[in-house]
Length: 197
Image 1 (tube, one colour):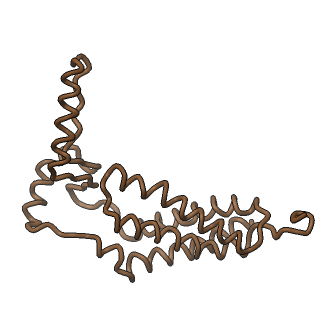
Image 2 (image 1 turned 90 degrees about the horizontal axis):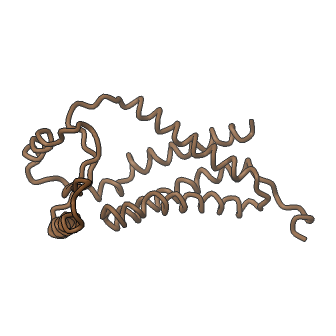
Image 3 (image 1 turned 30 degrees about the vertical axis):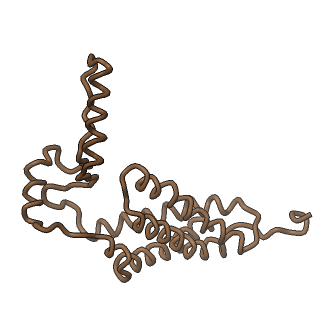
């Protein structure tokens, strides 16, 4: 029960930070850019996103037929590299039609995500024997770990701009340091003399 209560309170902090980070501060929006002719781009996307909602990439990595010789495979790979280097390059989530979800549903999923993450982190923290500062550092470290695992690969493989990497990583660390205050206060055990010796 203690872990669930701590996770619930930490999820409220996490959710509140997310609202502040995305709706009050403008550090995420500063990295967004518009197209010169938005209507023309929208029409091209609608006409060409033939698989519906999903992740689209340009240039697309074409796979050779299974019986293609090694030279054909190499030619396709070289062509992809040349087109990617020459640009334009796009890796995007595309929804060509109407939005099916609503704001309240998205907020519910967002809080559920915060609660699940806080529950997992709380369950780990509950097993520790650490002083409060170390428990707080544990939570901040978990935020940094999540950022390195989830955000840095976007830079390595999909050219996420460096600014967005820094903002995303800072966002994760701040979120789980703040939520970690609640978790660190409620969970884990203080070391005793026996633990220290």
